[in-house]
Image 1 (spheres, helix red, strand yellow):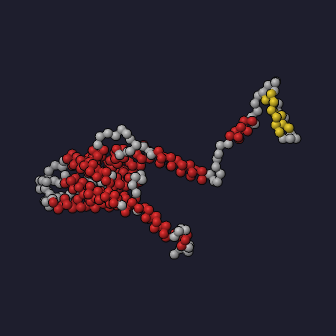
Image 2 (cartoon, one colour):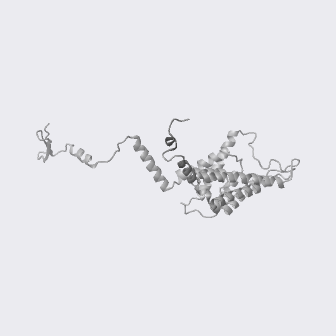
Image 3 (cartoon, one colour):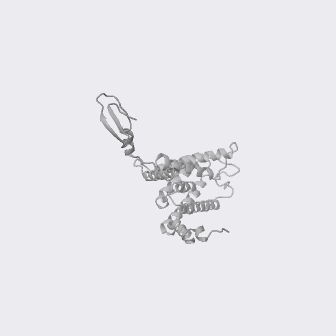
Length: 296
């Protein structure tokens, strides 16, 4: 146990401050709009997984398997996500991907509380959607139900790198397409995101790689390529304040008087500098001879 008083451990206002902070963090949770958004993410993910994984089922069975049509699978994933974004984007933002939610949280577009509920709803929706597909698919053709695996000639590191790159391009596309500062965006944003997903689903998608790629893409777009002006200003003020604090309690200021006085100390041709040693004063006068006379 700590010997410190309770007031020091909890702060001046005691444990109630912690409760107040938690309530502020989860303030938006107790609204109807919040739960509509969470439900939309659940339903969108359920439909997306049900339709998309259905395209991966090999109806030839294990005895006479048909060739895998990667174009069909990729287009099914891409068009499904485009449809879901078009349907639920105005309700929840249409993340339908935990990696996208993490990227939005890291760039402060949604709160931590909202991201937690979003990811939980997305995972639950994916499980329910896969479960429904499993129930309605004959056991003879269900196979692995679309579960992707790393190719035998590749390592886990190769798979991680592929995931990172394809999710990077997906999230970068989302941020660029949904940027409110842009005025040149025309056409369907949902379709652009869908095509990005179709490109990515030509490869395997897991967890670690997509989250890393999503955070990198969101951070680069939001803070490097197209930073928010107000956010950039606040960062600059914070950095300047930190730099001043490291210099101690004194601040460097520009004093115009010191510059004038310094210029006066420079001996200029044609000026007589006469210093009165008794009174400590300096008098200037024009030297007709153009020579510098100095008394020291």
